[in-house]
Image 1 (cartoon, rainbow, N blue to C red):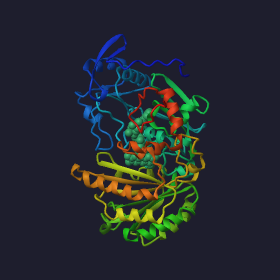
Image 2 (image 1 turned 60 degrees about the horizontal axis):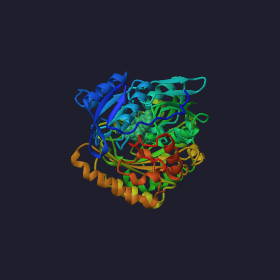
Image 3 (image 1 turned 180 degrees about the horizontal axis):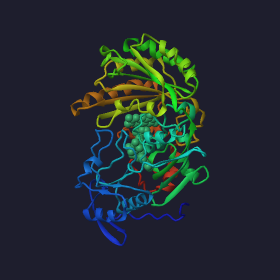
Image 4 (image 1 turned 60 degrees about the vertical axis):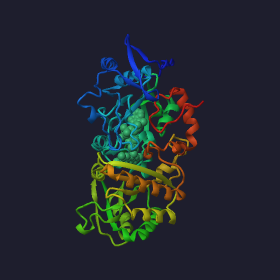
Length: 493
Ligand SMILES: Cc1cc2nc3c(=O)[nH]c(=O)nc-3n(C[C@H](O)[C@H](O)[C@H](O)COP(=O)(O)OP(=O)(O)OC[C@H]3O[C@@H](n4cnc5c(N)ncnc54)[C@H](O)[C@@H]3O)c2cc1C
């Protein structure tokens, strides 16, 4: 469907004139509005899906997201069942001057999937994935998780490039860039996005691709949720598996310096099909590890080879001899199963505070800093994660998509993670201290999907040289910054 040339923005009044009714909206603090019961009733009349209000028994469950640190109370949650619901919800919120939050998989660390007082547009029940194996395309709804996509695409021996935790939402991951085990071979998620459909601030549905609204297509490939509510993603698919060689090798922390130095040399020798990441943390009770190792600091190499299994075995040989391993679990396994391997370590319900840096190389200083902070983990769930990018992701120009970080070889995350509020201070302090100590060795840019809500001073670094172009496109499609609860791009003046 073509975008209508006429764009009508209602003024931000305290009255919503829609469906022939005048709906009182109470203006709350900070120019945000709370929604009256009458207004909620009116929204219910316009939607096919449920509208969940604060007095609804489902409300607390509906407002819980992956990061238990986030405790927001939306005025209402519009659980959309299709594009029409999204159009209604966007128009309703816009006309009423309500703050909007958009929820896909609900995984984002910043908690922008929810708002206080305004309207949360909840897409989590839209999880259909339709595969066209002849065209090698997947049509994905915006509440789908990685597991949904893997399940449907692997039925045809196909896959696309997404992340490494099957419970992550495809929507938020893709809109920020999206990298995982297949990034070095296939590029980022945005490099495999061939088209999308979204509802813009004027409440219209538009199609975007290289030939339709190409400016908007460019912007959503890394510009996050700034430009509208995406109601469908179309991904290019590629043959994979169904079995891949993958696994974990766990080494003693005492050998960390030697291990990370060898890892740094090793990653320069491997082909794109091989992805090897490093994690420093306390050992989980993995069945292949001696019990005495459980809970001890370790260095874990996690890897996947997106090609011939025998070739993969040859490629991982050096990784198995970086030191004296505590144990390993290596084998050919279904790609969809490997995508779920880390799910138990990163389930919902824990408290999380993450920070992230991009690196062009792992300098000696970076390695020393990682080792120093991995040696004083404040909780058994805290970890430092080094993801290897490069390959196909780096063979794309920085201005080809809104995601600009095409020279990044490693993304390093500090995952502050714990269970009890009493541990908040210690774990946040540790995460921040590591982040600051690692900063001199990093590139300065940051992946927008790993930013906390407080990091507004890093937004320019997240969009890098593409920021001005994004701001121009924002002015064209969302001049009033209706979609502001994200790593926000302000409309150009
Ligand atoms: C356990 C875990 C593992 C992760 N692993 C990876 C990984 O391997 N690779 C990687 O690249 N990232 C990874 N991430 C980061 C992930 O990409 C972001 O958290 C991402 O935002 C999650 O998307 P979501 O839809 O689940 O989140 P949500 O919180 O639902 O959405 C995040 C934001 O995206 C926007 N948004 C969501 N849906 C839409 C939509 N349909 N239209 C418009 N805007 C929308 C909104 O601004 C929203 O606030 C991981 C995160 C976690 C918690």
